[in-house]
Length: 210
Image (tube, rainbow, N blue to C red; front, side):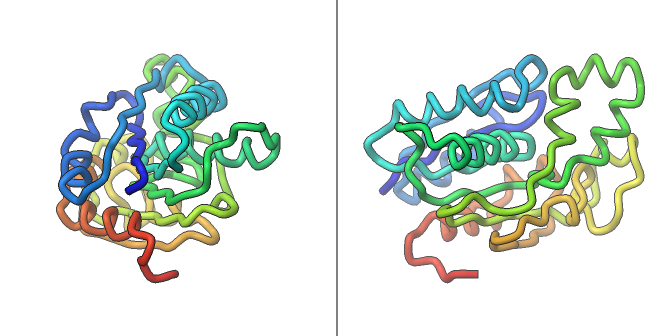
C-alpha cells in the first residue's frame, strides 16, 4: 500500500499521532511521522518542509493524515504546488483532515487577543487564521470532525455548536471533501477507534465517493 505521512497539530509533536499510526500499521499501511515547530515556523515554511519530507518517500505516492493545524500545513503545501507547479510535486493520493479549522480557528483568535496568548501561539497565530475554500485538486479528501464539546478552546472564545471543544464543525467545512462527524473531542480524535476506522476506509482506493 501507499505510505502514510502523519502530520501533528499545534504545540505537540509526532508522538501525538502514535496511537492512530499504530492502527494504520495494523491495517497494512507504512507510516512516516512529520514533525515541525508549530510556534516558530510560518504556515508556508512548515509546508515547504513537509513537501521535502514527502519527496524523500518517493517514488510511491503519499497519503496524508493530519490533525488540526497539521491539516492547514498540508493544504498549504498542496495548494502551493498547484499554483507553483514545481517539477517534483507530491503525487496525488488521499488526504484525511482531523479537526482541521480550514475556515480559521475562532478559539485561536480569542487566545491571540491577549499578550500571553500571542506569545504562546507564536507563528501559529497567523497560521490558524488562514482559510481554505476547497479541497486540493486531484486529491481524495476526507474531513473528520468531532462533536464532543470538551476542551480548552471554549475558554478563549464562545464556539458555535456543534464543536469539539476547540474547533467548531462549521470551521471544518471544505468544498469538494467528504465530511464525517464523530462524537469525540479535539484531542480525542487521535484516540478514537471510530476515527481510526474511518481513516483506514478513507485511505482505501475502493472507498465510495462522497
